[in-house]
Length: 412
Ligand SMILES: Cc1ncc(COP(=O)(O)O)c(C=O)c1O
Image (cartoon, rainbow, N blue to C red; front, side, top):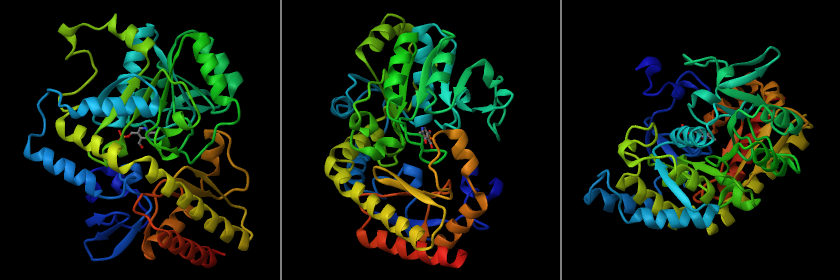
């Protein structure tokens, strides 16, 4: 295996080698050397449910005995669709295996129904390995994002990019009339958390409607805001919504939902005889195992009560970190989004992806991550984010505060 790992992102940890996992349960895991860790990374949201939640394990164990995949629906899909509609307010749903695919399929549908070529994303977004989204703003215009491997075409051909919270730029770019959809997280999370400013989502909705572009919210990470994601929490009105990762407790599964209006436009332009060759779907998508895992996750794990428990714990994590920052008079700050929180090595919170990218300090990141790891805490390898699961305890949070203080003390 190149780098000694089965997927090359797994080398991206602080330290000379990644931990190999022996077993995980709830908020903790044990490595092959027998060391125990508190997991605040949780598979970068894939295990936001906590590891191996009993309800999901039971449901998939039962389903395994009854078959894994048929390319036929099971009745669980009816319950899952109704629940997704209830949570996110969109009536129609389809499945994929990854959030990347949910986004790719949504973009294709948006192009298909609008007849337009381009998409619009915000600078330093991340939506999975979707070609059109690997574009950044530079002083010379749109460029392939750093590290972009083998882009099929220059991203300026497929993509318009503006900074998050920049309404005039959004209006200017949409006015070209060639944008099929805007794809965005409701709050940016992948260059660190960047919150929308008051009025930003209203303007985004108005402008996309005005210029005939569909609005796609990717809730894969922002589901941390509540059971219906940021969309439900703040009454947003997407045309399409995508979500993957934790939706089936980490069993590969993703979904994308769309409005009645989008469904009508799709219906009038898709035919049964080409349903399997149109570039949307996949043999294993909607398989019985994934759907059983989604049902268990939505019904018993990522429930209303779970968020009532995890969001205050994230606030406790943020308060602990904030107290230490104050105690040592550091020019840092902390921010929270539902059951996720993170600290930044700057005083003023970035208002867009460009500012956020400039605020990153890789050396400091690596120091904090490695110092935490040596004290039994795994942080997300990208920036300084902690995610709280229903299995995380107040004692875990307070342990992190102690460790954080010790790491900062060592630093200053
Ligand atoms: C917001 C968002 N969307 C989509 C994805 C892609 O998820 P996956 O890699 O499971 O396809 C990610 C991955 O980090 C993400 O953060």
